[in-house]
Image 1 (tube, rainbow, N blue to C red):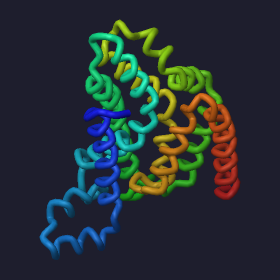
Image 2 (image 1 turned 180 degrees about the vertical axis):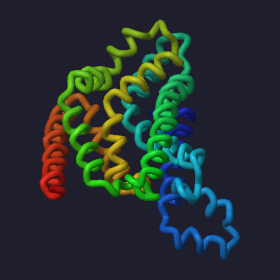
Image 3 (image 1 turned 120 degrees about the vertical axis):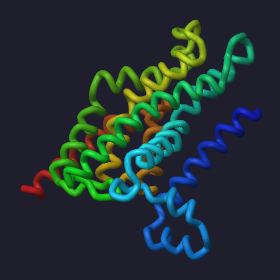
Image 4 (image 1 turned 30 degrees about the vertical axis):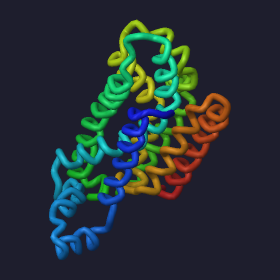
Length: 245
């Protein structure tokens, strides 16, 4: 993983995490920024639905998706880069942008869901669930999805990127990137929506979820993660359901 394109990608991932960290700062620290004339950053960090509106919530979800999902696709990106050394017509940047475009589409929907749940008073301004029923439902859905054939099919493609690219190479880098993004979306959408349980701007949740999703896609380790994680999520959902009764 050498070259300017890799430096740009890693820089973008680190930059996204840095901005997310600033967005997650407590409100009093954001307010203190005004003392030092940092009105731009104060405005940027205000991403709660009650104060920011849809576009900034969308921006937050787009950053979350890029920061969390790009690392999970690094083995696939590396495979594509290796193939590009012996094959003409490769465009690393087009592949990555096509991949992120799919997650931008997910962000559009997720931001809309957050706004709707906030207006229904089911989540707080910070995106964490205020409803035991919602939390239980999301955990149960995510847990059950860990055992689904769709999840398994998507993971099998993520774990074998060389086979994936050989099957779809003729489609070109844009379509390869978007197809890879769709496969990744099929793997991870339910886990991403658990942000509504742990808190949309919870850096600890984002970090843990990213590590789990990276491990899931590793050929040798992933099979020891997916189904045990499903059992854990279902157990937590059952515990919440019992507590709520």
